[in-house]
Length: 191
Length: 392
Image 1 (tube, one colour):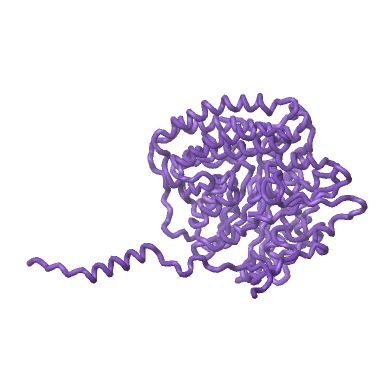
Image 2 (cartoon, one colour):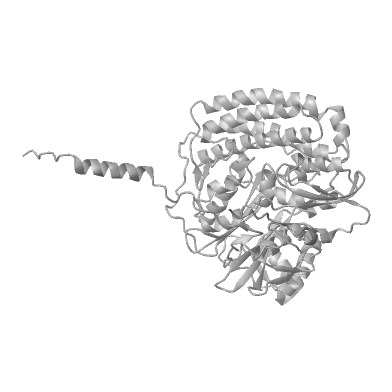
């Protein structure tokens, strides 16, 4: 099925809650309300025609300008060989969306990753804890306004610039050549 | 007097992962992070009752180098060497995934000869990656002999790739819109000489270890993954195909010039045990090497004569902010996906790399229940996880 057919199939089931596909993009996507997400996902998985048996990717994008965090769900069907993209737009101050771990098991680790790096709260996730960073890390590194703490357990997070005080070799050569040119007697210009 | 050194401490009592386990008379073991069989720095928190595990919880993140954040800060071209570090055993695929994602952003056409160069480089890399995988897997379950055999063959490929791009591990060979260098003169002959030699070695390897009775007894029926479970946990690549799911990105969603080649997709059938067991995963990789040889032979024979290896790439790559591109390629560890959102300047706003090892680690907790500790080692090896690819 094409993206349009999948969108129509979803619209036939959920009516007005399904909007139009985002236009003018190479890969179109569908924006759904955070409250409808689990219901739509479960239908997409269980419906015989859609049969999205796999959540192949889950990511999130931070947009400080729009004050939004987008959570992006890439669905894939092994039996029908078609893909679809769902997006949920969340408030940047309090990004919260229901977990879809109960629908696809792969969401478990993928959601934990976004919780850790982007700070999205997935409600109903059975084991929501940091995955990449240590438990007591402060902040969510993939946020655009993330500022790193100067140290973590007395380990500094910054490093001296090892190149400081070094001079580039070509600059040295250039300076030497200039000095040599200045010292050398000027050639007489032939008439 | 200098100040005494402050030793960093971790609050072990309050570690979050410990709250997930109910310990009543069981033993709690830390397997890792520096354990020879974990193929990198991964920790497994193992709850055991004697030799039998009740649960093994993988703890990852020791190799997190924030590659996705780096991707937001450098230019599209400048990110290419970093992608090598996503998976250092099969770096060519990470290159290709990134190149294809940006080419989709720009709508670029890649010259045919460059595509052939990519296929040759990638398939060579696939063989070398699978050699590491099958070699270390045999070693992890106790057969040390096949490992040097595999590494010896890998050296030939390293030499070939070094001749092609100057590097033996982190290649940085692909460019957005093409490849960095054309094949050196006489390269076709060298590769086909290697293939003639290697195909015989594969048969020898099968006699030595794949169909070895002790090896089969060790791995058959071990930790089988049924197909629906593999799909649900989003296993990809040889791990998925070992469970009998016929899906190879090269066949199902053809990219590059793969439709021009004739090759098979080996599927696990439970030849010596249950479909989707550890032996099937091993066998799938061995067979994939044979298929890669077939692809390489065809690619060398059909190599186009037109010498162009770079497409028309703009000097400054600038894409309207918010444009998205998604690329899927068949890496040595399966379906590797890049999700790129363009930023306002010459760099990406967001890069997300979905790798096969990451999702493969997610299944270990569910599979480990009731296994022996020694079988956990075999399970990790059979899933062929590479630590930097999990953490990125």
